[in-house]
Image (cartoon, protein in one colour):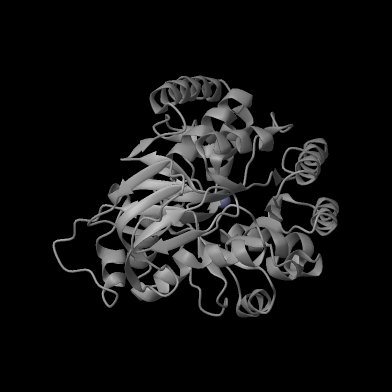
Length: 423
Ligand SMILES: [Zn+2]
């Protein structure tokens, strides 16, 4: 058990402040207990003095892509993409086809370390590696657990590389869901034919899971759906039962007509906003009006820093949809409702982040949201506790040797870039 002394604890739901000591239980269902003074006869493995620091629930990412972790700094693609489809074709689909088992492991370790250091203890990931599908989810799960990050994974099933690889994706999903919490991943409507879509929904039903899919990230998805199926994306997905699950996650949702927004808002599914990725791909701006309250935030593989992501939502959204600091914070924290309502493991009260936030002005219950938007960032993350284990102490990983891992990820990154040049 860990004992945190002299904390200012911020309840992430009520934003109430409490001056207290905290006893943190270990384990997947571990709790926290508030004390005025250290109790006797309790075995403590770690004592931390949090004087002047803020303790609150750690963060979570609603839509991530481990597979893009080694892309940072890579050379330009062989053709400069002129539209969204070409971004996929010349960048991401070229990259993911080159991934082998070691590169996936490196990508997952790099992601997990970045998450831990920015206070993110739970990641919902959407993975693709078409030439290394088998056991790819287990490889990611192992890497995340080595660092101490909880996860909800899926494999991005698609027909874009032929039916044989779609089947491999379905098989990988089923074998993973037999023994793990997870989702059934689909790339997007425009790369998933009717047979694969139906099989995926059946699989989600069989394992009491849900679908995790990109929806209308670009208008291309809608055009393709109209031309191929004579209906809109949301109508098509609804017809196949994608929205029937409480666990379903819809990434992006930029190009939706009002009737589609209504279908989604009235369904059980959750929407993930990925502001920086949308800016990077020049696909447009998310507007949550009409989509209901089940909107959470993700990074879409751009990085692992959810505080940065929420700032992007607040500032870049200006002029497109105004999100007050309170509304931004609500979306930032909504992922915890998704996780707890669906009884997923790994996001209990004993996931904590300790912020060494040296504000030049007073911080109180009444002005916390101003500090959230304009002040607090991941450089303030001092310690991180995941499932009751101290995984980051004084900004350093305790679970793995970061230097060794970064040497490994840099080596795998170079291998990947070389391979991409020749593909
Ligand atoms: Zn995505």
